[in-house]
Length: 181
Image (tube, rainbow, N blue to C red; front, side, top):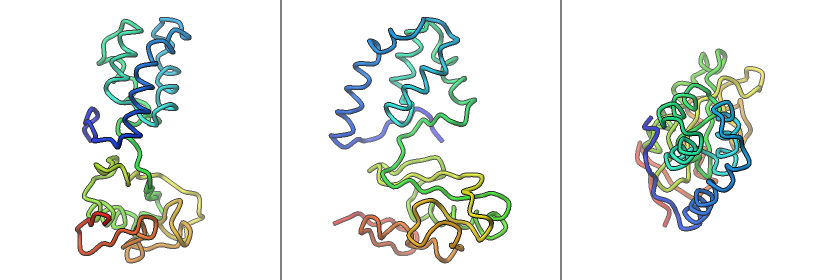
């Protein structure tokens, strides 16, 4: 995963993100200029944007007078922070022990192939993102993910084919992703 990859944004996302980033230096004045405030600041930025873009990391580093590499190092240490925007339709695939045994890796690979992105990435149109999770709490009936049409835990590798298309009207074939018309 490339942490500072820039994404094409639709005009609404661009306006929202631009406004947030423009207001961020003023907002940071609510925090002491102490490196001990780094994690709460990053949490607030992610709460506002749903991810930590490179621009926000730079602004935070300047405010706290610490190197960008230190901000990035702290943010990558904690699993709670993401560096790519989440998709409109986030796909979370369980890879806990029971789901792994029942084909979770194959489901993940199916989604990666269909969407032409890897786990932890977001499609360029920001429609979909893929995330691996340890457990979605469905008591071992099988791999699945929150938001799947027939409920989590009921899917095997074959059922993952086309699971996201009903949400968007997209059609899929083979490993190719088709754009909406």
